[in-house]
Length: 199
Image (cartoon, rainbow, N blue to C red; front, side):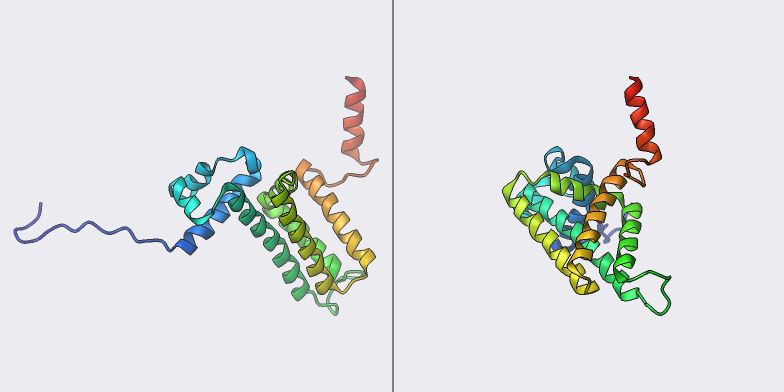
């Protein structure tokens, strides 16, 4: 009930800046595309996660592919920042024996994979979507940029850089399957091999 001469004023919803909405949509896209991939993730699901209508998403991103690429960019940026931070924090005077900046970056990457599985799974989804030529070109460019970034941070020889990225892909596959080792004689492979031979 209002007293005469006064009016109830409903609180106005605060307008969220488009840049902030865009950032929230990219973050939501990272999580949703990590689970469903490019083709299995409806844009409406990403919009609902942020609390906006689907047409608004397309006002910020021209297409579903553009939103997917923005999520892929966020993923590569997270990995790049992880490497940069590890390199900046590495101190050879206090490091463990046999530890160098490249190994420090590798350790930081393992921690990223274990702390945020969505970044891991979105990497796999990005490679899986490379049948699309535009996505393939984009992912190739981001991967090449990451290689150059590691070269600059580590100043390591090309052979060691190659080994670093081969090991990184090995880690990605192992982490996706929830195992720590992919070696021929490791315990889970022997156990799975026995199960297969018995069936």
